[in-house]
Length: 535
Image (cartoon, rainbow, N blue to C red; front, side, top):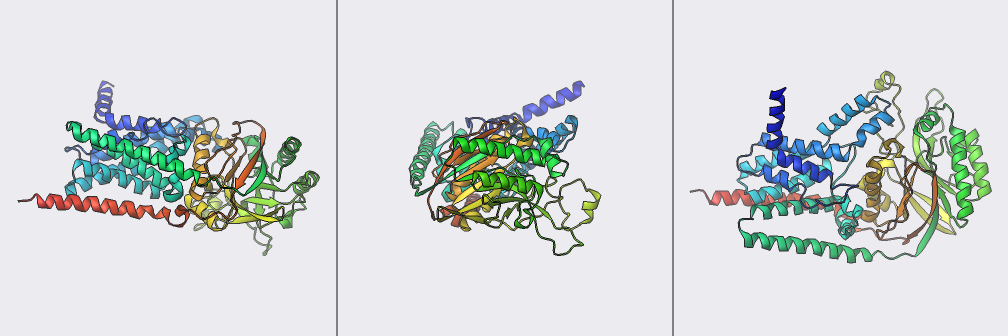
């Protein structure tokens, strides 16, 4: 035992800077204040650029950092595994530890690759710091993860006006800026013995950050232009997980859930009689709502009540194609519907495209259907055909709603597709009930709201248990619902009809080319400088 304690003490001391970075990153991400935003990776990178550092040592230092920051920021994985997967807490904690061990390996890979490049091309310590920042920025875009995240989102969370530049370079681009600032802080640290140089760079860094804040502030004001508005009332019924599971499996509760949403909708309309449209969350209506299936019991209950309210509805529900072959069962889809007060589909429903692995589909089952027979308890929803807008005639003018279901709001390319499809307003329907009162609802919220800034389209978010809210194209976040409470609220969604496509939607997502060119330039500069020093 003493030998093991001594071993861990030794490793803790050896990787103390990696441990520090893990804590700094983990406690600077949502929902914490971004107190270490521009220097959280600096201790780790300074460790990696030391002259005696090996590729192996750099990799393990990065692994320690990513393990700690994952444990802090994504502790909710254990809660979700227990709640969603219905597995014991002991196994849920093991699942969390496995997640922390393997999910963000792009961080140690970045350090290993950066150290190898330093030795291969004789890069200086300063050059190596910026190489690490660029490698990190590139790898975090392509590395497969369950829950996409980066430090750019913290700018929106903390209301630092730099986030307004996301309509030019996206939040991935903002993350790259944050990482480069971390490298710059590291460079200043390396130059501390040269006081004049260090102070000069510190002044330049401060001025650069202040300039980004100022430019972002005034750039955001350019989007204070609205010529239309829609009054949307969101219903948050706070349906429990067990009830939703039973309803999905056809074991009852469909009528109970439907009546709960209708009851809250009636209350909401009494309080907000000027409502233009009701919005319910993901799979809020626990049955099919396709035009050819309107004769079902729960659908008739819905349309009878909606007709009395005389208000159209946007809601998550299930969708199914008409059978063309009676010997085959058609797929069920997680969908978003826009229906009139009589339940008639006003446009084709949007069917979810980005499905949740194991929750909504079994990986590789499309290639190997036999897996579905081996694991019949895994849900297997059909897959939609990508971003699409739904048209609604409101007061003799067409409004295009761009639908996102759950974490489709985390994919920048998906919302770019909605903007290109002519969406006037983005609408995200979600069920975050699986995550309890962890960090995830706040993280998921702001990662979704970020899409509104990139595309400069207002976004309305309707959730089962919270957080429901809306954000305008100028970045103004409207009222937020409480967590795990029944709630309803009206949002006045101001928007600009036929708003222009942002630079980011058209070209800005290609900023990775600039980063790649900068990386090549640093490597060539280091290599040529090293060659010039040879005798």
